[in-house]
Image (tube, rainbow, N blue to C red; front, top):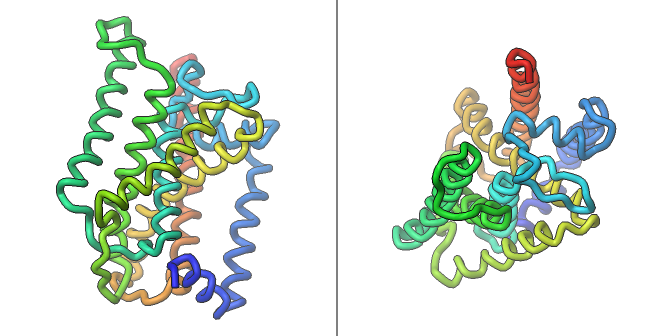
Length: 270
């Protein structure tokens, strides 16, 4: 049984919990109507503004509408979420072993490429000498590779803190498994680069969900530590309420960062 099927089975074992979680996420989506902005995209753009500089020239425009995140951050958080989804869909959602050091070294090259491309882009923006002409395709590609790396390394570490039973699986167990992750990222990248109007909302929502997943995962560690529940969980059903609380904190943090950016820009007269 895959881990996705296991999650569904466990959720059915507690209908009241399933209902509470569903109501929470419905309220979360409905709450977007209260955020600043006239459209959903504008509200997501405001919500994500504390995480991303959102430079117009560094962004994609599906259907002529700018995505909430710049190309690099779209790649990072989209790649992070798509990689996690792939892990759970292929039964590796509880893996507690890091990839081999050879695979980690290859993954690290993607992060290094993002760093080089980022500094090169910054040098151009500042009018300094730079290695090459940056573009949004490179920003997106290095972002996707970094998102893949973050998910591959973070998932085993988080799982070691959550689950009572030890799982000897690696998040990426072989070169073949690493290669199987790329088609999903390539498809996501192609959809983004195509800039078709139909891709606007899926990309905006998935990349923002990637931010929630990343920040929420860090919050989840703190929530579990405060509750002294490390290595005590046996089912996803037990973890869901804690994750919902971690997402609430993530929303509060994102709102705070977005509002702090507004205050800072006003203070600077921008």
